Image 1 (cartoon, helix red, strand yellow):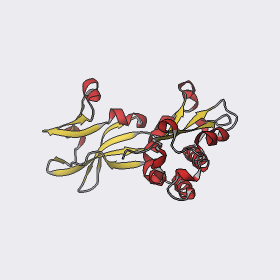
Image 2 (spheres, rainbow, N blue to C red):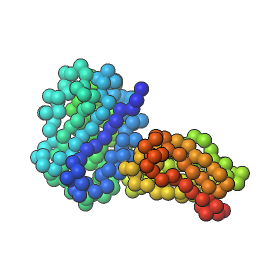
Image 3 (cartoon, rainbow, N blue to C red):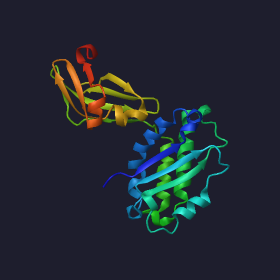
Image 4 (cartoon, one colour):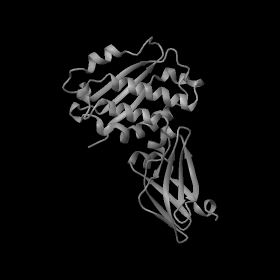
Length: 232
């Protein structure tokens, strides 16, 4: 069963009002899956749950949202969407903590206004899970490829470290957990630019292969000389 997509949308014309939002959006798309996905009723057939940030609105369109989704057997088109007002919000002036709180509060508004039949357990469990995310570090560090890299008789884990500032592809040496940075990426572009499925090591040259044909055809190979990177 595929994951529910939890995402945030803003109009391209408002990009200058929400600098860096795309990184937070990508992080939350990953973070919210284990946090709340299993608490959502799949019988509603919602595959995308989102809210739109709209500077022109005076208030969040709560009543419109309720009318669209209350007492519905299934979700029309599979998309649940709340239109959110950002009229009084100065996103670019907010600290990271303030941005996290704002984004989570809007997710709470969305789920608080869905009727109980959208949940597998009490709705409060979703709200609690969201509230807990406010004070957690929004950072994801995990192996990118299951297979270990063997270099100079040492095993390494290919790792991706993702934050709201950047995503870093690195090798972590198993023996001492030392990090060796390979490359930094824009967080919001990792699904395209760091879409790797495997690697090949020939001497000191490490080459990553992409998961899909589009990347293979149009992207330059991700190639690294480990002799220059791993020096001790």
